[in-house]
Length: 157
Image (cartoon, rainbow, N blue to C red; front, side):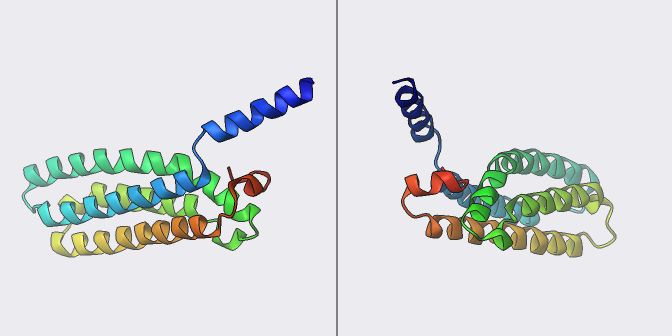
């Protein structure tokens, strides 16, 4: 009887929490939101030092919010991919680290760059590449998910 109760409790907890497909969908939408933020940033950034610094701080603040959320979801999605036998594709947490590294390098030096336009183009290219990688991986997770219950034992929920 106690085993049945504990088993039911486990299923309730799994059923009530966000599913892997929910997380993958969130990663996809937040990656696209981050990509749009990058596009707006690159368009509005100025070479004027006071304006540039203010733009960088606003950009960093919002980008860090999105990256914090991605940082929380991607390790679980990587575990799911590994559990489904696709360990070579379990690299979403690494992509988030790459985004964070790129963001920090850009914010630290963009306003002082000799060619601000070139720095903006470089930064846009790097960020869009990583964001698109996360979109592709999150879509792959959703595509590979079979019946939710079958995947619980494989690192998915």
